[in-house]
Length: 171
Image (cartoon, rainbow, N blue to C red; front, side):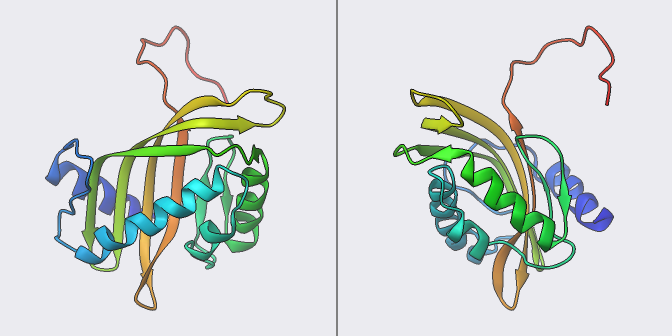
């Protein structure tokens, strides 16, 4: 996992943060660009309560990890797969849609990353009566497994305004 994080930092630093609507890859791997619309479809179904396609596009290996937008973390397919089921079940089918703003993407061999802002519309979470918008900042790492891109790691949290800290964060 340390190698993957180092790769993300290195590629991100080398390629800069470009803001694009259509992702470009630092290494020119067209297979990632071709894969991302399929991944976006999985994400749209996920925020409407259906994790099936998401899980089909995720790594089922022991080094899969998630730092989800609802907090906490999991490692290994048994935990991560269950987390995907639980997280998607928090959403109600509401016709939610999303627009993904690619800030940066890159590939190196069988690894790739995306840095995005996910702007979701008409999302119904938990007990919400009315759909509402939601925005996340997301970093994802993908790996080619048997020649197919799979989500290896996802880190998502709510997009909030930048502000100076007033206290030191506690665990």
